[in-house]
Length: 344
Image (cartoon, rainbow, N blue to C red; front, top):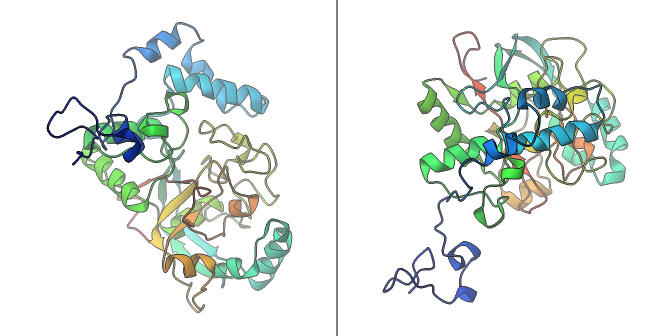
């Protein structure tokens, strides 16, 4: 009987019939991540390209065209992106306060009309009802979603299994500074626990309340319909299917889509898990839409993704992962401190 690696138990140097095995066992690879990148790859690329610090400035320079920002980001993926600090992620501090969470009947009707042409139904959006007041402590949230580079370090130390988005389980060096995706909520929570133990700090997934609070502008009034303002996403705002390259992009490449406090990629690139499973807001009924009927129950995701339409970039939009490859799920973390308070 073949071992989990595809190697014969009687002869560890011989493979079983590869046509009877999944891809990684057929390649003689274990389930856990194995890093085969040549040592010194980043240093070799740095000999060919400009200073990474200058490239990093170009990625988030909204005066440059998108092509220039993307090119700078792609080069940084190979040289080493100074913006990505696995042990000390860049955080944005959003002051606490009171805000209106959710949407009114009129706002749901308007959003349903605006996005009916891409198949959005009012039933889906009714999960945003009713609008209600919430008090939120200060939030310290990651400026960018967690990237492949950070996930690689996590897998190396925990002997974890590569995500499905890594073809054949190989680390995508060309996308090191892109958000990791095809991650499940328990894996995201394991990453938060690992990073907390590694750094001596307290990281966790944001609550749904915290995510909407940050994306909508914090306690500022009026509330933003999208992280960048009240206009639907254009080519400069977010990596969504209407305008994007049909793949993830280096984090921060859409500076015009920043939130009021400078948090990036909340509107597109990958959808982001929060800490909460779906439940109706106070005073509302459970919405048994197609997602609930298919999954029974699901973890809430927020924000748009590169495979999805701009309706998901609305700051009030509640959704989750339908079990198919179209749903590119990632995440970012918040840090719990004495100033930010407990999870809400």
